[in-house]
Length: 259
Image 1 (spheres, rainbow, N blue to C red):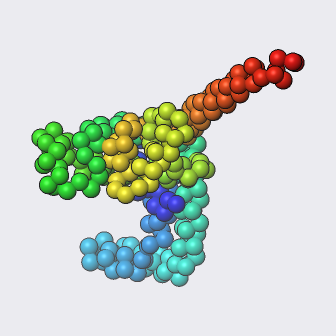
Image 2 (image 1 turned 135 degrees about the vertical axis):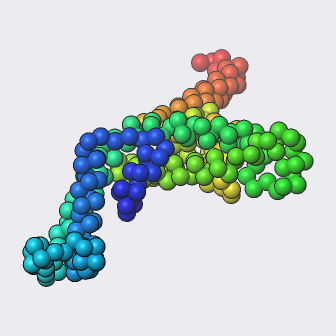
Image 3 (image 1 turned 180 degrees about the horizontal axis):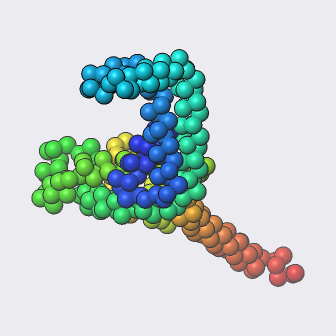
């Protein structure tokens, strides 16, 4: 669940996602609402005086304004909270409606980090010891350079992807969000095991031989459907082979000859 939408959208922007004027306006309203909610009129008046902003010409007006704001502080805070909540709703709906766009805009940053993890996964598993890393050779040691930063990037993007999915009312995260495909359901089960097992999920997937890719909801569904279709075809072929073998086994029997 997203608690701080301005920070969330800032993090999206950090990894390449863009937004439009509707989001800019909602963020500006949020900023104003927060300023009103946290206003301290008496303290502000004191600071204005210290800065020389209170003069004989405006002192009366500033005092009255501060007193009015202070008297209505609770109602101002309540009203500001309502406006901030309404703006958050606008931002949530926008993110949900643009989920695929956001995923695709995050993909270059994901792919760049994933490329480093992919190479590391070819040479050593998650949690490898320094001794085993060195024993694996110079290529493994080189692949370890920058791995921690790359994994941090992938983990940060995964968190954002989960929040985007929540806004879009997608199902909970699944390994199909993060791979380019699986041969069949058994292969997909191996991916699930790697993703949910010990160590970093992305490193584990790479080490298990899967190609990392961040998918939209439709692309993830296609990965699952492809694996299921292959398994269904394999099972149908196996059943047909068994049936054929059974038919051939009784064709030469007296009953089959008589009939």
